[in-house]
Image (cartoon, rainbow, N blue to C red; front, side):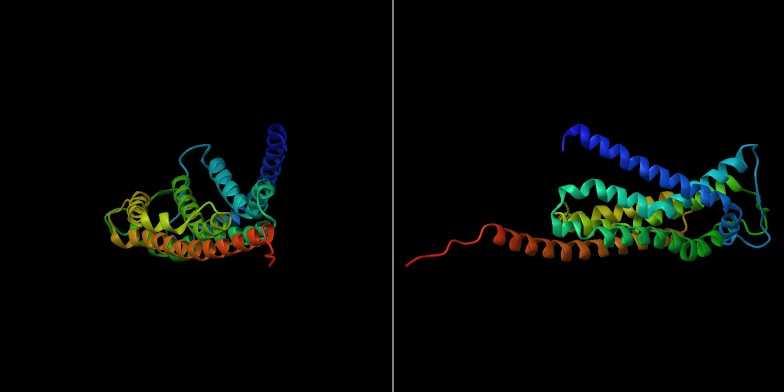
Length: 250
């Protein structure tokens, strides 16, 4: 396949992925009121969301539709990405297409669910209680939704680490040794990122973000190690089939 043909295939796959995202975003937009009610659940019952600009209701609707459209369309998008790189893989590596697409989509959805059902119910009440009864909250719906979607996206990406590590190890790109070697840097980076995302100085909220990242990093190291061993054994078997030892004659 020539370079021009590669670019043509990339264009076609990007078009399919974008079309799937737009269609899924349209579906999410139609249910935006139900989604917004779902996103408001972590707030105290007495607290309401408000908008302070003419375009804010529109931008919030687009944010909600775009994000959950991406979640809905993720199997198609991941499938198109896999279809683009699959011709460069061996036949035994291409057989992982369906499991990879399935687990990658499920991992992202699991990250979103973890942030909503585990992190937000603990972190939001703590954040809103710092001033006690000294001030009444008047939340902007735009800032509230942006914060929630950023947190959900971050956890969705974090939960992709073991799946992506498995794939990269299977095709021989990633090794477990560099992950072990740079573990301390990963810990520092994970804690720093958690501190930026939860800038409250509260160690509890910091741990809610940092600890899952560190656990997923260790899980990724184990997955890569196991996948790397299996990849090496399969590669030796493939070379044995391709280059059999010559038969000795006496």
